[in-house]
Image (cartoon, rainbow, N blue to C red):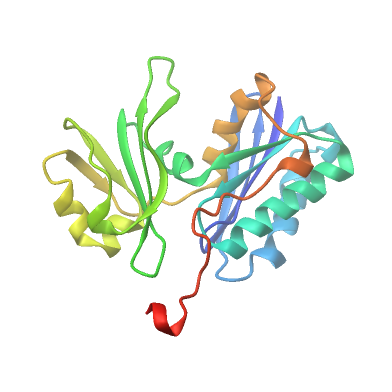
Length: 223
């Protein structure tokens, strides 16, 4: 199975290609230039693999949460390429893509959402090596992050770096913190593979970003 994956939810822009389960990817610190970089990266990857877009089995993208503009770019590009070829699309949680980078069994993902808030989720690996959601993706204040039970948890993401109180909140539960982890297309491709195999993908028209936050600016009287 051949899957193209896109991830643009942070300042990094990444593309990955899964060929029969073997994933290769590229990541560039794009800043705000995702829209200029993503399609040339896709073309480069397909050319190096000697594949035409029509030879793919599906396109996956990091659906969020994350940067509003970044999420729209990945979703829009995935939809455009899928419409042009009739391919199905898989929308993958950016938080789960972070969890996928660890070898841990229990993971708390916390990404800085700006405005003093976090994008948060907690996962536990099942016997089949899939991720079970313990606390669903949410937007919250660091001091109001949901509780977890037991120890041996791994903390992942920029939220632990930006908000030290979060580490204190989970001090009795966390075994290790991976501050540097962020969503990547490599893991988006890995997580998308079973969705395409099981037919759990969607028509491009139904592929949507997952924003979680409803607005990005506060009115003066809300500050």
